[in-house]
Image (cartoon, rainbow, N blue to C red; front, top):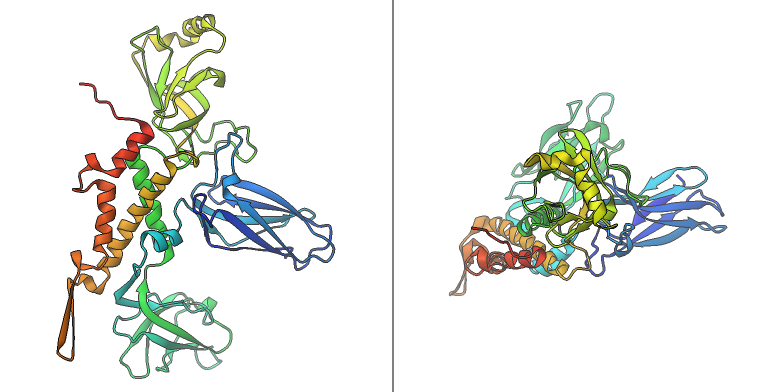
Length: 470
């Protein structure tokens, strides 16, 4: 292996201080002085590299460190392309072309660490009614113990493995209990009982991954915790919820109706047909006022850039609009076709034989096809308020789930000692309901009235007021 690549964290964010820079550590076990490595920060969704640096080794050099500032990962139009999703750092040796990748890591608008330490401060994300392993077996490979009985004592326990011999199959045991033979040739579940016969665990075993020698591994049992991956999914769902509620993407997003036929953009890191989101073609409606420029409204607010605009009659390409004709309103996504060379060109455009049908038909379904960039700029004044909406929506859901797992949602707790009794009542069955309610009122209004909600206020600032014509 020419290089080993690792990174300093497992999660980053363009917007969170302290998480904006990806630091990569390179170790060269067999490279020599003068070797050149191309190091790329790569989006795993197929977009490709968003930032690249070159490392040239000095004589005797075995390690190197490089970094990528997510705020500087921009396309040629100046928009940040470090969208939420999974990433790796890849290093390619120039002389051999061999590429090595780091473990995948996540980039998000809100990180799990921020959610836990800022928006859910003090909330224990574990269940008092379910136990599990703090860390799954790593020495006894090929064995996974998803859950353990709730009555099993918390603390240290032991998992032991004995390999197969010529006369006996491989065995597993739990807390010095009776060894259980591994008899199935493929993945299977086995019940392992402890020495007293009072407790057991249910282990999933993959025989082909079991160790070659006898091993014993200490394992810690504690309350089953909500893992970071689940909290990350809550953040992703919260982002989708808020984007639908405010009618715009929370970050710059490539949108195209025909991802397989669009031409590549001028930036070298966008290949033919790339889009983050597949759009829906828009219908053409004949204008009522022929003194106005031809216009259409994109189904996306906060329109940052129009890269391609065409017209189709059924499946036939009938109109190609050059970019110098296109003028758009960033807030509401309205696009107008205004020639740059005067009114004469306008009449040539409207009266050309190819476009006469535009004024014969009142309506042409799915006429406009497009490729655009839409969403809030990271520098926009609303970026921070939208992040707050996403964080509080994710926190609201996380706290509610954590509360439902808290002692089966008990309403009160009573303790007594030396004749003194204390009672604690929990709002809605769990201790952190007041914080969840605070976030709920922030999102949906003091009385869950949408008309006074923060979501509606941000939506109006992002896309303007909604007009109703009666």
